Amino acid sequence: MTDTSVTELGYAYDNDQPSARRHLACLARALDDFTIGRLTHLDLTGKRCLEIGAGGSDVAVWMAAQAGPAGSVTATDLKPQHVNRHPQLTVISHDITTDPIPGGAFDLIHARLVLMHLPQREQILANLAAALTPGGVLLIEDWHATADAVVLDAATADDRNLFAAYQRAVNERVFQASGSDPQWSLRLHQQMRLAGLHDVDTVINAPVWHSGSPGLILALTAIAEHRDRLRDAGLTDADLTRVERLLISPDAGLVVRGHQLYSVRGRRP
Ligand SMILES: C[S@@+](CC[C@H](N)C(=O)[O-])C[C@H]1O[C@@H](n2cnc3c(N)ncnc32)[C@H](O)[C@@H]1O
Image (cartoon, rainbow, N blue to C red):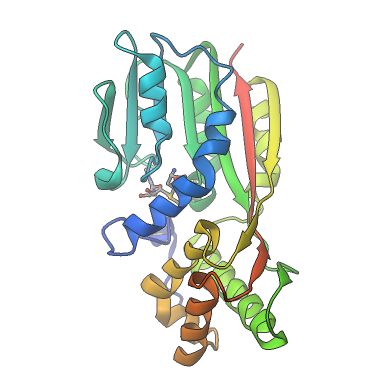
């Protein structure tokens, strides 16, 4: 019997863990500028906005500043303690897999790196599309995470092979074993169209991550929260100590093709 019965599937990490603040801050540093760039064409003054699974990103705070006193933003998370605050921002504890979407229609709904982790992703997307006002915009962003040929440069062949093995173990033993779908992002554009949205538009953010950058520091979280699963994949404690140095030390010389972020936007007619 595996540890992944259907009721246990979901986000592999936990915002209550000590590593969560660093993890969510790295996501914000790596991705917020790109995400905000996808939204700057919208005039959000006086609008109602919804951020699902906000984590520690500043996107909801940015929306609140744009919406101004006549608007409002609701930020949800299963565990919302790391969400930053703003006078126009209401933060709620909410499970998008089981709780109804907060009442009223929204002019903008955004979810980043949430649906890929949840087995109910198709239904959630349809529910979010249905919660838009006419003309409202849905922006869903998820990673296409592969473990193949990700290392662009490393100080030694051993470093290259070790990181590749680590990445494979994280993808398979941590994320896919918890119900994440690394291919979901490839279906997002079509799913948006099938949900009845118009003007569906996909942009792919393709970063390169160096040792010491937020994109690689993120990968420490698997060691902090799932060392047992990585050991089961054949990685020793000595291997994991070497991986930590490759991820953290700016002089460790690892250069990696980062996960591609599929940023898919659609508009309710
Ligand atoms: C990978 S983090 C992404 C955080 C943030 N959206 C970002 O991109 O920086 C996933 C977030 O989704 C939240 N989450 C996981 N399952 C959820 C659920 N069922 N309902 C609402 N939020 C959930 C987690 O608590 C976590 O904060």
